[in-house]
Amino acid sequence: MSVSCRLAARSCSRQLSTIPAIRSSVAVASQRRYNSSDAPVNPKITPIVDQISQLTLLETADLVSALKSRLNIPDLPVGGSFAAAPPPSAAAAAAAAAEAEADAAAPAAAEKTLFAVKLLSFEAGTKPKIIKEVKSLLGLSLVESKKFVESAPKVMKDNVPKEDAEKMKETLTALGAKVEID
Image (tube, rainbow, N blue to C red; front, side):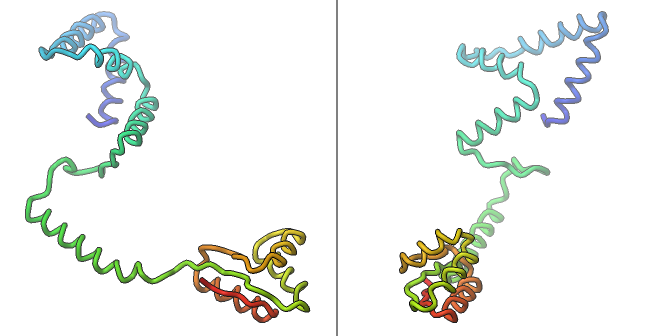
C-alpha cells in the first residue's frame, strides 16, 4: 500500500472513530482483520509489529531508511511495475549493452583528469614573490606560506584539474620556481 493510501485510510478511520455508533463497528472489523491470519506468529515478531504500528509516519520513514542502510538495500525506482522482472530477451540485451558500455568506458577511465602540483625548488632572489603567490593560491597566511615554500619540494595541491594545474605551473615558473605536475 502506498504512503498516500495509508494516510487516506488513517484519516478516514480517525474521522469514523469520532462517531460513537461507527466506532464500535470499526473496532469489530479491525479485530476481525487483526485475527484473520491463521498462520502462527513468531513470538519475537509480535512485539516488533506492535511497536512499528505505533510509529508516526516520519518515524516509519526513518525506520525504513535505517533498515535500508543497515541491510544495504538499494532504493527501488518509483512508478509503473517496478516489481515485474523484464523478459529474458530484454535482460540479455541489457546485459550486453552494459558490457559494451563498460568496454567503451575502460579506455576513457585510463586518461588522467586530476593532477597534483608539486613545488620542487625556487631561485633565492624570487622567494618573496613565490611566497606571495603561494599565499594567494593556497589561501594560507604569510607565515604558513613562508614555511611551505621553505619546505620545498612539497605538493602544493592535489586532485587539481589539468587546466588549473597548468595555470599554477605557468605562474610559478614565470616567478622562478620549478614546478612539476604529477
